[in-house]
Length: 309
Image (cartoon, rainbow, N blue to C red):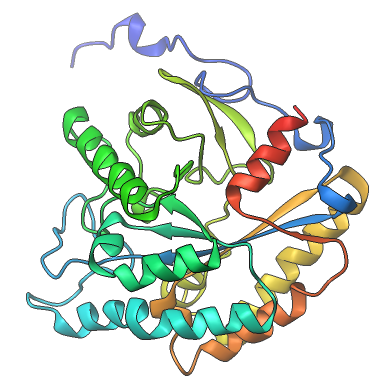
């Protein structure tokens, strides 16, 4: 066997912290504290995900969580996901209304905007922010994908949503939170200002791309109804406990270190089911009415944070 060349053991980006130059490594506790409006401790960021799962979605590079699982045509799972955008979403909206949650960011596949104009009208009427969430859950962004192919997906998603919602669409949330190495560069080039894919912090931070600096926003993967119920098969009571525990820790830290962000992802095909909606209701009842809460969209949180940097 031939010996490995010396160059194999050399990596030009080896350094203290992260082995890349996308952002400056730093400790959260040493950063300048952030203040939210009215001295709020927590920026409450609620993000329902409106997704379209194609009946013929490909298995490669992988199927997004919630994707088709049975041989084609998997009508059982297809109709269950479609149920979320037609029935479950209105239960979720009713829960938001009962708890006075008005500032919402919706992560939306562009195919949902095309196929369900009634949801676009609801979003406009409620003045919710729209975050680009790719084209659909069958067209993912992944390592090894041709850059031109991915750029076309980014362009289609953002352009369609801007046209149909009449919003600037400033945020991005990759389908299945899957990226290629090019994704941040491509979305920055399309005018995106913040994205939600990286889960390595509790506060925003500047992220370098080939097309300028954008902001990585903290949107935890673990605190999601789909992760807790679909991914880890935990109970409704577990969901409530994790929401409250996560909130309580951030709330306590905010009293000592400055404002924090509590982000919660809700999937109507999951939480909008009759046997699960009570757990969303009870979870929000524990956090939405606490003192020191600032309800905000992702763009509002981003603007407030950026103004203080």
